Length: 64
Image (cartoon, rainbow, N blue to C red; front, side, top):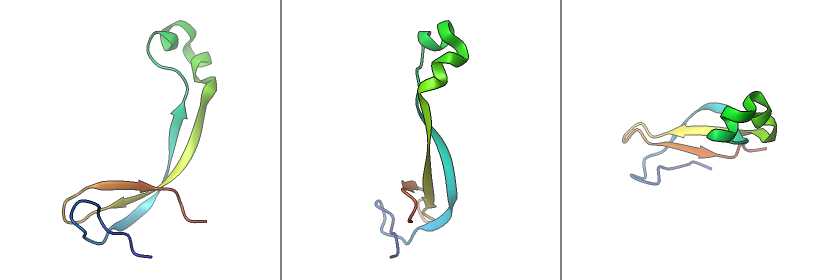
């Protein structure tokens, strides 16, 4: 199925999949606990698509 830009309806171009960090803590907790504050972090893989016309970037869950 072809994906189209949600802003200008131009067909999107697939540029690859990337791993993104999710969860964990921020702010003062990171200062107090350092690397221990990152124990709650996880990784999520997202497919990255771009619009060649308006340069918007859209993320989707990868197809299985």
